[in-house]
Each structure stands twice: as C-alpha cells, then as structure tokens.
Length: 70
Image (cartoon, rainbow, N blue to C red; front, side, top):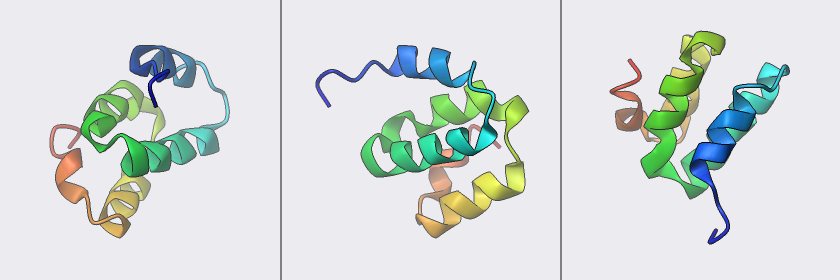
C-alpha cells in the first residue's frame, strides 16, 4: 500500500478498454481504499453503469461513499 499511486491508477483506468476491469477496480477501492472511491467514481462516471455501481456499493454496505458521484 505504500507504493500506491492513486492519480496514476485513475489515469490508467481511464484508458482501459474493458469496463469489467473498472468494476474490479471499484471493488478493490471499496476493500482497500474506501476514502478514494468518490474520486474513482467521478473520474469514470461516463463509462460506468450507474445501477451496477449502486448495487456494488449497497452490497459492500458503503452506499454513502457514492454520494458525490450521484
């Protein structure tokens, strides 16, 4: 976790053609970096299925983290 580069991750995810990778990244953020979930969702909002994101947040019991995204 010390080598984590949040800005670099957002840059790379913005270029990923496979949207399934984005949902796996969201899961990773929910588990390890919940404070940065909002930034991730905002930066990828145009590529995400909003219903799926909400379902993923509800399943993790972290729906409140998507407030600024919504």
